[in-house]
Image 1 (cartoon, helix red, strand yellow):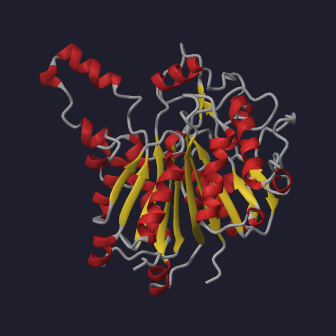
Image 2 (tube, rainbow, N blue to C red):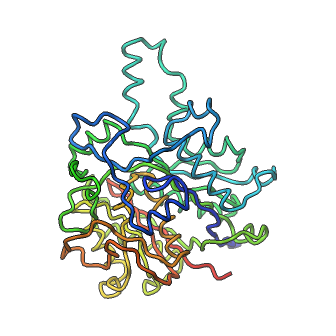
Image 3 (cartoon, one colour):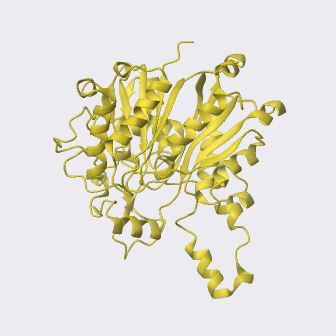
Length: 415
């Protein structure tokens, strides 16, 4: 007997970003084109080839966690809890109900502390294994981005961590969507969190040639789709959406942002670093097919738009392949990475929120720092200033280094 799918809605949002540490300030930054790229302060960048990043500013972990728990939680975990709590408050969820806490799940994406484990390793080497940090797993393990949210709030539903490189945050939303569709949970806290502005990350990705080296002018370093783009800028933060079945949302009278209509995945299977437009287009086509979206219905895409020469050219081609060359020219596209930098595994979370808020407020966030057109990136990229638009269907793209691709489709909820 065929299983009935549950329609899934977005009922809560939470954000910690380089342009705002909560949802209202994040949206204000997006809609005004605020730059969040600054000189690095989290580590000493003096001898590094890359000295700029999208850092979260003025974040106080003890606003969200007690002092002991905050001390035992890595920065990416702290961001995750802050954004997760905000999403649940935004959704008006009553966590005093033990049956509800029993059912709510968490699906988060992160790289964890993969780029920051050298110091505790060297301490063990220097002082001996008897001095190894016994709390590394509970502080820095990738699973803690999801686990700490659930532990703090007593959420006992499915709890999962995703890592598919830069596609991770969008990937997590797709998995959460299907868990709710199949009835495994009525609500899932889902998105991405990242804090990898470390010396190793800046040095390694800098040597790879992926990062902008415009250290003298950080405000204009990230310039997606511009002809003079020279690499992406690392960012950090968290973006969390509360996904909820339509039945649950109606039962509690929830305010609804939109429907999450579909998700699609693909793998390039071509190269370890170079993107493939055909692979990227497959994820977009599959998301539209999953959400029963006609390409002609799509009115806005929050682009992956990293500000590298290859990626932006490849994504432009992918959009044309997925939506048709002529139709693609009528679709507004912007890269909010121009303001926040690239949150890697966490990017899909804050960028899905940007897409949802664009539809909710009827305003397209801009691609800032756009000065010189690139003939190979000839789509409507909403240059430099926000634009009003009545939106009904939007997409959010995330394409990972190595070939992992994910896309989610959101639709205005008419229920």
